[in-house]
Amino acid sequence: MFIVDYVKDVYGAMKSLLVGMNRTGYYFTHHKEIITEEYPDNRETLVLPERFRGEVVMAHDENNEHACTGCSACELACPNGTIKIINKFDISPEGKKKKAIDTFVYHLELCTMCGLCVEACPTAAINMANTFEHSVFNRGQLTKRLNKPDSKLKAGVE
Amino acid sequence: MFSLESLTTLVQDWLNKTFPPTWALLIEFVIVGILAIALFAALGLVLVIMERKVAAWIQIRLGPNRVGPLGILQSTADTIKLIMKEGLTPDGADKFLFNLAPFIVMIVSMLILAPIGFAKGFHIWDINIGVLYVSAISSVSVIGILMAGWASNNKYSLLGAMRSGAQMVSYELSVGLSVLSIIVLTGSLNINDIVLSQQNGWWLFKAHIPAIISFVIFIIAITAETNRAPFDLSEAESELTAGFHTEYSGMKFALFFLSEYINIFIVCAIGATLFLGGWMPFHIGNWESFNHIMDYIPSFIWFFGKTFFMIFLIMWFRWTFPRLRVDQLLNLEWKYLLPISMVNLIVMTLVAIKGWHF
Image (cartoon, rainbow over all chains, first blue to last red; front, side, top):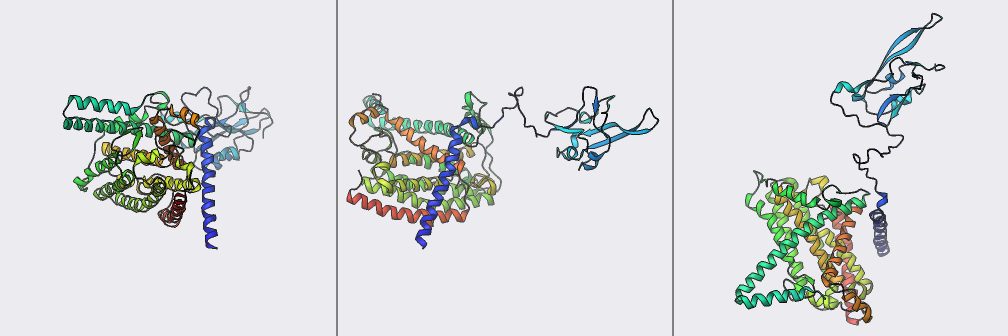
């Protein structure tokens, strides 16, 4: 029946439009739902989500030890050459040569915050921090060294 | 009780006493003109900031909140910026028509203001064909838009103007028919008579379901006629940059922008007059004491309250509904709104003849 379909069409259209208006009307009257962050004003109280990806950092514990073995899996995983790992060879007390990290170079200006390096890391040495105020006056300041000076590999991490 | 009617009679008496009648009339013209322009400027500022705030709250944002307390001076700042900008005329444009078009659109909006009753005994021109006058004049504004689109010598502008023409010509019909269904009940085209006929209740409530259907059709059709989203095909930001006013800048652009908001105000005022009783306070049949309490609220507050309620509804539509394609737009008018409003008009005539309304 044509006329039945027609009436159904009109009824369905009105109903769906009212559902939409109900939702937006709810948002209009409930200002606690507002998600705008007034950023420079609320800088002290700003809470970022845990999974926000702002910058790659390397965690160091209180003994200035990190978990990076220098395997360069992150360097291989990086799609745009952001990470460069320079290795050195430590001589252990028994006289054995052991590969260790010398400098973990991180080019923040090339990084797209994709997080593939963090996923590739077998020892969870690097992770994404949620800092985001990266503006500097000199581009050179964006090339960072992630392992702290005189830091060494945590015992037990292979 | 304060009323604007006593104010106008006071001014007229004083003018007639101090000046000869011709001069008094001319001075009244000037006063009315200044008041109309002041109303336009104030409305432009208020409606723009209202639109932005409504949009923001519906989209879970804060909206303008930097200029002045709660951002209420934002539209003033925008206007000052627009006044200081250069009004550019493109090289390939038809200079005369290009510069004339914004004024035509604006003057049309001003003309429609004439028969509207703002408060009890407060209107510019108490004409006995008020509603007919409004519907006749409002279709002239499409000429201004077509003129702007053609004179800009720009494909986007022309496309936008043509779409706007198609849209206005088709939606004029359902606006006319839904207005007619109220005229059937009142039996008068005079806006003052229409308001007075709602002494014992507004037509939206007095005339049962047909009035509600024609109110819904009216509000859809005026949204389309003022070229607002979801029917903003003549501007169509995503396809035509800005449609017919792509080439305009500075104050000439501001005139188009302002006339859009003025047109919204005027069509909402007409809707409020026809369906919600204009300046008539909220009356329920024979409840004398209740009606008396309602009369204490001045009539211009009722008028502006109702008009702004309608404007808010239209803004709500804009920020809720998805846009229509050109073919969907014409489908909606010719296959749905027009047949429904025709049938509705017949039902309404039956109601009026049989006297089934309250």
